[in-house]
Image (cartoon, rainbow, N blue to C red; front, side, top):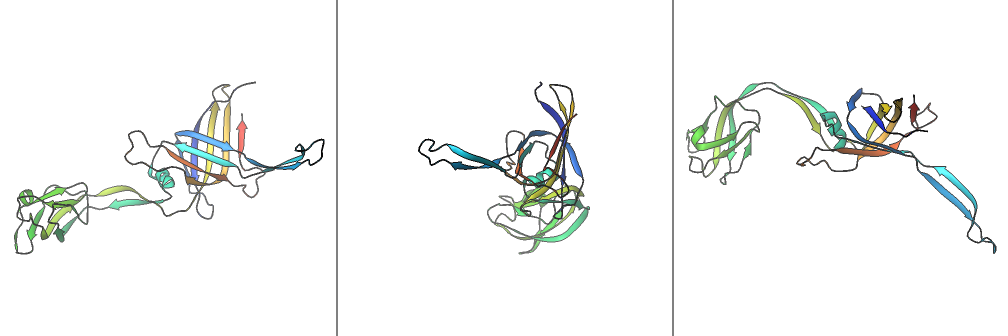
Length: 248
């Protein structure tokens, strides 16, 4: 007899809408991987005088197997699952915006430019009406990383108005997560594991599960964000069980 305490490298394959593999992501730092095999119970109770209320027959029927997986690794592909979204590649080349028209509010609030990740040097501008020069340092404030601009108090455009800006922007590369575009996540889960109580290896294979997030993603959390997905495991065609655990 021995206990069960597992460590493991967990991999997730996000399946397409047709069930095709897109490749395994991992190993992922998984903080919970729980499987529940619930069942329904049908009872035929006795109505006889001597045994009233006792069970004459009890039948258990299987219900869909449930899985919950939580992880604190948050690459874009996994974050997209937590936000029911998709990912796309960001590949913005560097360039120059020439005479971009901007209307500055009168209350010193920010305006979003067409580009972000601006170069700090080489920015110029003009006031549209009445036509005149725009002193970048004295008249406007720029958030270069976010691509935001606003009028400065005491500057020539303190009351707001139309200006044009010419600036350079740097290249940007990365991944974009477009959230809220998928009603469910179809995924395969594979575990390459070890029972720390015995030193023996173990394998877990969940061929397909339909998952959805169970909690919000707090982008301003004071601790590392943990994502939890839960759902039901599908009995895949050609398999005789919804999942398999191998004690090796």
